[in-house]
Amino acid sequence: MHEGRGAPPLVFVHGFACAHTDWKFQLEQFKKTHEVVACDLRGHGATPGRPHECSIEHYGGDVAALVNNLELRGVFLVGHSMGCRVVLEAARLLPKRVAGVVLIDGSRAGSGDPDAAESAARAAIGGNYAAFAENLFRQMFFKPSAEANAIVARAVRSSAAFGAELWPRMARWDAAMVESALATVRGRILAIQSTTRGADLKRSPLKPGETSPWLELLTSYGARIEIVPDTGHFTQLEAPQRVNPLIAEFCR
Image (cartoon, rainbow, N blue to C red):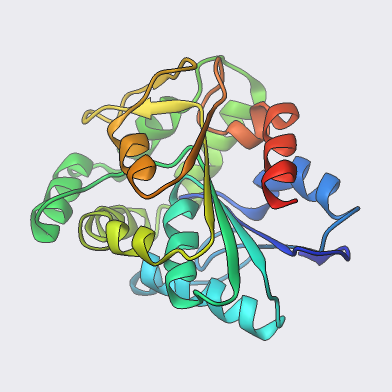
């Protein structure tokens, strides 16, 4: 999707096993005042992609190429969950074009030795990826709803071909690249956070004033932190009335 006019341009990047439609409330609002772009990453939504092509490095390169091809300047990259990694990788590749990044409910899946982080992520999946994905996404919602059920079903179905490969690669990128990517962001960083996740992948809601290792890492790189309480992992879908004004003010 590419609509609207007005600066600065905004590029929205979805999460693991998700799609650009997860930004529906943001796209509808911001296309009235900004040039907005939202894409489906390889293997997601309407974009084809072979499993070996599904990685943060490829995704970041794709988003960087999109920004270049559309000749966007002073752009703000907005990522959700895995998309936080993708926009940081894209910003690392395009330091002069990116004015800032917005990270919505991100996390860090691996640290220390990249090989060990990747191996631990593979072990967490075990021999049943569908069960792993079902549990992973169920943990993202604190209140049952038809929309939550649809998102979980979509995630399990859509990621069957690539999920067991992408998840460990994501952990490896976290261990090897996240700090260097944060260090290369020339623009501002805003983190909009609603949950935190334990080593067992179980999510819990954050309250104002609380922090986490992920938020402490972002703070060390100068990020501004905004907590959205009483909300699950899909912050932009569950609390657009909080998320949209934060994005608008940050990009103003």
